[in-house]
Length: 115
Length: 113
Image: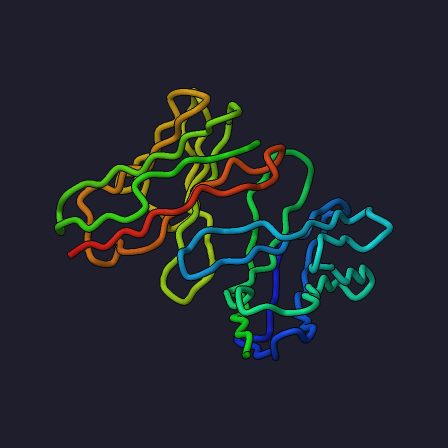
């Protein structure tokens, strides 16, 4: 079974600073994918970044980067130059096996950006 | 690409009535649709998986007679909450999964009064 652990219920960051949201995972599948989503108060799930288990380099998408440490089974999200609009819930998720399988989500971290 | 249109975005219904939620794939054909439920201040949990032309599969603890899922075409999957009760009040959201960027519909906030 797959499991995602997010140990930070809430985080605060000053505007323009960088912040790291923690995510650890557990799976027995050799092939898996790791995702980060942003969920604002409207509820929509906004895809941020993806890391495949066999990807050699850490994924980056604009201000988002994923610090993937396979041996430690961690996939932390780094947001650089935080903006007020980054305030939201952030979910780490994973899929396993090949084929179209659903995502397993962590409990989420609420990020608040302070001016 | 990979846009999923979900309606309604919000619905308030009386206890005992039924509510239908639609997810349409606008620019692709989805053979599978995952339906998730999110209670307030909680994470997303998979409820069921719909497959075009066959029966849906439900996660443990989800009543298949209460949450009717239909995937009659490659562009439409529906979730009907039958005989809704206040404890069914939740956020329901769909996703076609892999191959479509793991995109999501915009979600439906259901309130049963």
